[in-house]
Length: 588
View 1: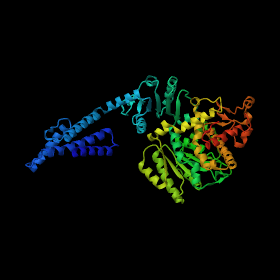
View 2: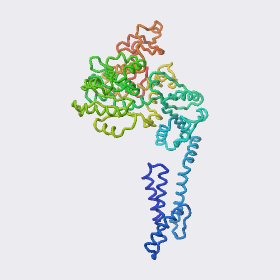
View 3: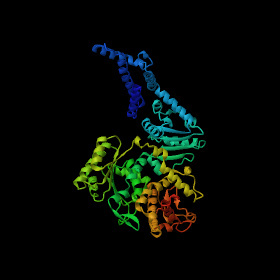
View 4: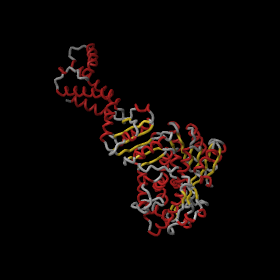
């Protein structure tokens, strides 16, 4: 009995130690333990007092030869009278059979289990994408729900045979999406905008299947500047750049950086930065453009600077004139911003370095994001040495380095030397919380639902285009900024609280203006409104992407509105809703 307990204890211990190994590796190692356990059992059962040392060696080799038979129901149990040992050999043989099945038939068995799950489970995950990304996403799903039913839709025929612990499905959507099921569909990046076509197909399927929850990756410019709508889907559209930078800004907000440097003070219970957030962008590709727009939205606060601006930026690139011209076609307001300095020079050129040194006294953050990972890392190390030579050993600007490939050694060095932060777009972005649970998106949907209670003409969330959906999301994402500006607003006496709320409302209007600018909207001057627009209180022309409300706070009262103060009340309501959770904020 002690031998049986010892064997079982060894199997349990090894199973725990090998739990992070694959099923096949774990099975092989446990079968090796079984083999080594049998040999001494046989040896001591056959050993006699007359056995010579040479005979012991021969006996040991014979036992090693006979052990595999014992593991395959071929053991001679006549020498073992103890029932516990008989049970032990039976268990060993069963485990051997199980290992053979796992090694040779694991894939077929797994496919059968997954197929049965898709038949009987009500909630099914569908992952469409390239194999590396799909494998990472499916592993993330399995980590959260080990017994989830998962379907893999390959992007090319050669990927059908990939072993992803999921049912491979190549039929059209309408052939395998069935009524009565709840589908969570994840369209991972493909680099060719094929997800637009897939979304159109799924929207048609959604007319008869109401429970299609789709998260899809699209091109960042499409999300910024186009108004896409899929009325028959619960759709959440993201881009790699947007997701990566949004995650970064959660921990590295401009307001938080200014407060950490004690660059400001509270005035009438609302914190006012003493100066704008100073940013330097070296390299102006897709990631840099989204970083600039997202930071601009997050730094749309008023400061004590003479012009009150919240952001000061230097942008440098060797091909900047061409890239700036193309960018300005999408964001016309960018050319009207006096605090944005454009430098057409290589990021490692003398002109660029001089420009960076000229801002060292107030520089808060440097983004290095060319298309060359090695160049980004080398430039980051040069800047670290440059900062040291100018006496910034402990109070250096934050270095944010874009990585397009793995570079563990340089990353470790920069993290240790300068506290550098790295933006790396890879499969690690595919998280269950971001793409499946979608907490922020649900809060934004609730924001709109509350707004619909006040407006009889507001459509349902799914019938909004991406422009208005993103406007609601921006309200939710900005909540931490308002809490940084006035952390004690909820505890103030009524008169002081009212004053703080109106100051935060002015900030909210600045943020809202910036959101419109970063999505391609421009000002529609009051004098250009037609008599019909004035009479109908119409302040925007959607086809032209022009808005009359893109004016300073004090000028809102001069615009046509159904009642005096209505336009300002939208911003005020968004602020008061933050401190009264039962009434979530609403976009205008």
